[in-house]
Amino acid sequence: MISASRSSIIRVNIFNTSSNLPLIAAIKNRFFEQRQLNVEVQHTPNSDEQRNGLATGLFEIAHAAVDNAVAMVESDAQDVVIVCGGDAGMNDLMVRSEIKSISDLRGKLLAVDAPNTAYALVAKKILKNHGLIENRDYHVKLAGGTGPRSAAMLANPKLAAGMINPPFSFMMLEKGLKSLGAQFDLLGPYQATGAFVLRSWAFKHSDILQNYLAAYIEGHRYVMNPVNRASTMALIQDKFKLSPAVVDGTYAALMKEGSGLVTDAQFNLPGFKTVLDIRAEMEGMWVGVAQSPDIYLDLSYYAKALAMANQTHRA
Image (cartoon, rainbow, N blue to C red; front, side, top):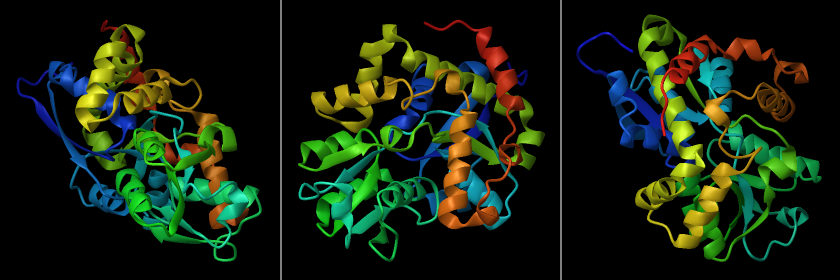
């Protein structure tokens, strides 16, 4: 653990989705506090604001789809590194009730966060696989992160589709919208949520980062332990104020092997290669051939954090 007598303050920026339940569980169960860390959580309305905030030092750690880290490196020339994984992409392609198939999205609007990162690129790839090309067959409209995006789709009948993850996907089902398929089923393995930081900050604060990641791993273990099912579901309910059916669906999605939370927040390298392949194809980057994943990663802090977490036994 950190040897300093006083806690270090860590500002962490997240989207308000169930992907961050391990972080919330780690805070609630004082895993960070026991490692002399005081975590201050910030919520971002969209990925542009999050990326700008990390670059300008408004917070130290971002949790989001790791393609945002790639965008910071490639588009903004920021020296950002991904330091752990989180989940494999629990998104569904949610559509309005009148949409019967992906081909019905021709001439419609696709709701996205930022037009050229993460789940927007995922949606565009899925539509391309079904013969639909942006600006020829459909158009995109900015609608914010998952929460605001789902609310916009519910309020605006012109927004026909969007990639939505739990709990909002289940809330939309209750409101009469439907899913045309899970991202995992439509595209396969994908490295979705992860943590990323400025490389310079990580180098100067390696002990803090390693302790943070160790507590975050413990949060993952807590949430994914079936023994803690009842308390985890209560945490979902307390955070999002959901109906019992939405809580059940959200918990099941988090636990679903392949697309839900990943054991110990491990980084999925094959899934990350998919991220880079999609960016290369959909954005025309790197002459269509993905870069080496190593450019964007520094998992040395995670390796040390995992060893630290293995020395601590949590129920």
